[in-house]
Length: 183
Image (cartoon, rainbow, N blue to C red; front, top):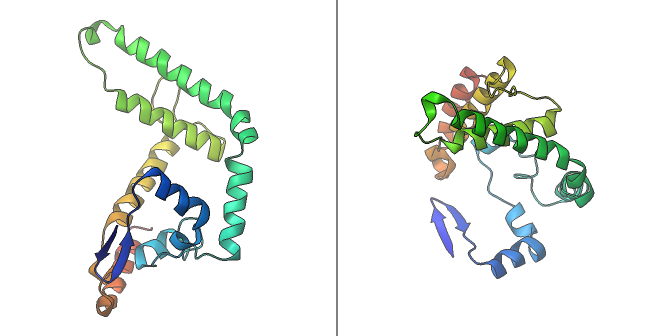
């Protein structure tokens, strides 16, 4: 199915067979995405894996991801880290559920699961734990979460100039906002 967003044609793929065909056989089609001010700002001028145009750089970055990050050997080597984090989460859930003031009250699992996901990703990517065993986040972790949250807010904000080419002069206003917030 295809949908027009302003002047940009967007293709939506539904179904496992079509998805497999797009990802395996025609991966160069989704690699050439329309570029806009927001993506250029957050992806180092569209040079990362998600926004780079199909070409030699895309092939190299994708190869590095497949060989270095997502290989079965690499995933198996990082398994103890993931198991350690999940074990700590289960222990925290148990401790929190047995506290006197929390008996007969429900626990919000989203907080525990997001903490584990955050800690796994940051430990694998940066080699550092930002979440302490008691579940509190240290100062660097709070700063990192704030930066990521701000990036999502600004990245998700749409400008009319992104979809209507003759309003490109509005992108200058977006750049001023990004600079104001050091993004």
